[in-house]
Image 1 (tube, rainbow, N blue to C red):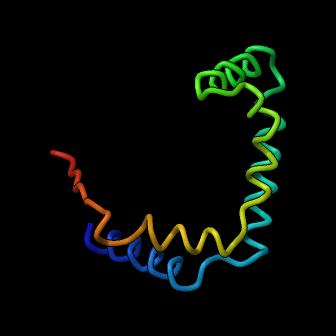
Image 2: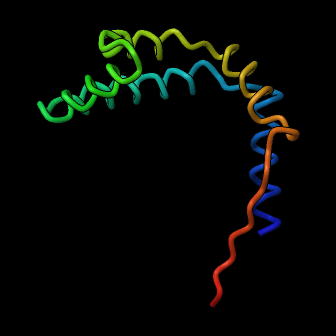
Image 3: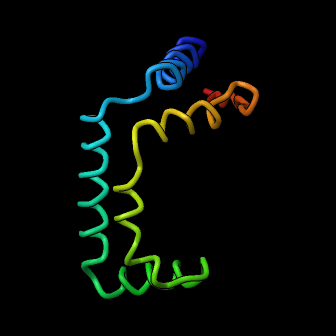
Length: 99
């Protein structure tokens, strides 16, 4: 368990220090675009997405979702990772099987 926690902390520190490459960000954006395109292919899924955005206060956000993801920059991710993954903001729960 300690090895897994150390490996995770190493990756988070690397993210906070170096950020991600533009290539890696482009891959994530492409995957997100594909996911958004295919998730709303059924009428039921589209209706659920519209309902979710209406609950958030603006059903028209469904039309802006992809553009919002595409607008994210590597620098923004770096800045947010430094805030979100700050050690002072974390708690660790160890979950062990009884077997």
